[in-house]
Image 1: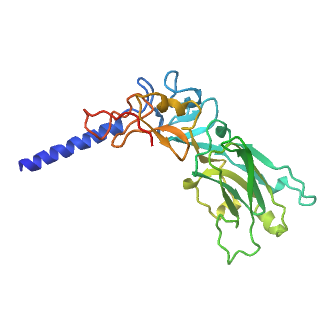
Image 2 (image 1 turned 45 degrees about the vertical axis):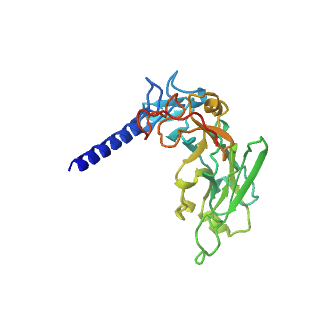
Image 3 (image 1 turned 90 degrees about the horizontal axis):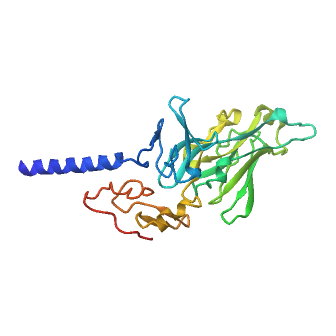
Length: 302
């Protein structure tokens, strides 16, 4: 019985330590950690002294209920911030509709939009896709690679005259998708009619085409999108850990614990194994799963 009591006490202590670790603040002292339902960990913050630099300033608009978070001086809505370097934001789609097209002389001015957040934070590697939806729809995008070179790529979505034996999937039938080069920034999207020799009635009955970049895990193509894609914004995943100044935080500050990330070719703060918390805060990994008396090891490089 005594052994059982000690076991239960030990389990209770472990659970309490785990709860304290998860509940530990991820913001700087005396800084707001929440904007509505969104947790805002450092290096982000909503007021002076709470963020790393201006790129990480969040505007918390309390005119909404619940309040909404936006990137500084923009209408770019923030939906999630993770300490693994990912920022989830809403970015615009671009569309054209057939009333904009002269089917007689096939004249058309393509519709274009940029993704403004990608000028500050590059697209997260392997997390997003470029999507074009519609019948007779040509979508393409331009951007900058990590080395600064420009690129252009695109795809065409068409609708077969008789699709009874075809599967509606994002492989060309009403929808096409492309991978986005790792580390891409300054993205600009364009959508236009492909002007192929497809059935005119079919094209006219599917009035609009759309193009956008979207987080791959948050999007699943549906045939109904060809008739009407109602969203004006979609969720995109960008990488904040490669911001020009933040990459030196752990490399230069020996009070923090950092890890070299081969996939990003940058330094990114990371708590040592067995610890939890915010590695971007000084001593932010103290609230770990190890015993309270233990301290994190010195910096390690992998």
